[in-house]
Figure 1: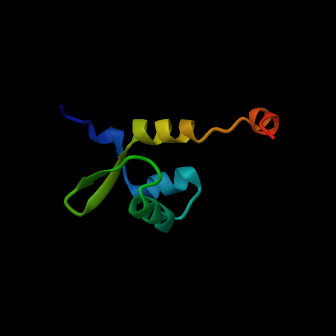
Figure 2: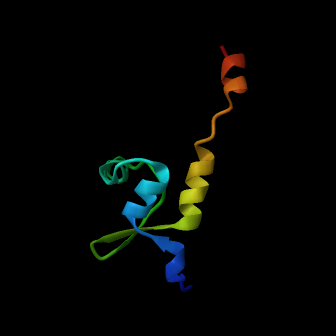
Length: 69
């Protein structure tokens, strides 16, 4: 399976899109948190679909949270 290079985005682009520092992404990778990433040699990339999927999983419904209290 070949991945189109336009599907791969670098950590600076992901950090900008998520409004976090690139160092935050580095920490998340070390802790096993954050979006799934691809490592090619020493370089790290993210698949756009993986970032979108991870972001969707971060949704929280405040109505459900208050009902559980």
